[in-house]
Length: 254
Image 1: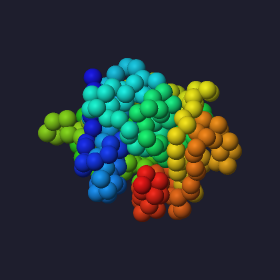
Image 2: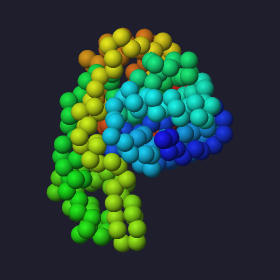
Image 3: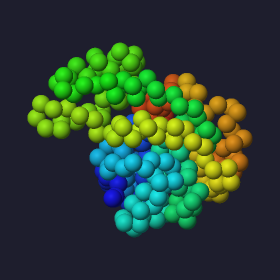
Image 4: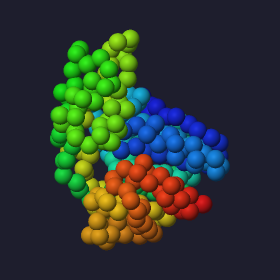
């Protein structure tokens, strides 16, 4: 079983890992811009997400090994690796396990620390969608609004909708496993894991995922890291302020 990826451009390998309940296509607009600067972008769907395979096993050790297998199969070395949220946790662990494969690491709005489960309403809402009754995206959005009030978050979540067949909607994510294993998403980086190469942490100024108290932990695991703040952005900083996010990434990787 290998991960699904959308590959754009030619040049130095640059892998992007999406967050929980996302998919690689969430990053397509920025990826096209990155690919114009002599990068080959790999927009990966992590297991149980997007078009990648479904499996009962789901934790960061396993997802890091999925990525290692993907790099081996595609002969990718000296990669630039960017991960957002859950993808950032995968990226951090991968870099500490396989530092010789990673040239530079970028982590978007997540710290190495433990996070308590906080996706209950979202998962309950997605689980409530009855696709024997819901026949349009608009109907699904209305049903989900009973659980998720913020329209932008619903738009993000409903990108997981697809036509299973004509007239029949479904979700690409493996919702049953993700509900059962949701506690894995908040797990901390192993205490002794370190990465000694250049690393950039990007945080949204309206996000609480990386606070001032996280800095010492970040530097302990990633001693050659820098933390920068993207203005006018929350947790989805790459979507909320793509211009400043793009500039920060390119300044670092160049």
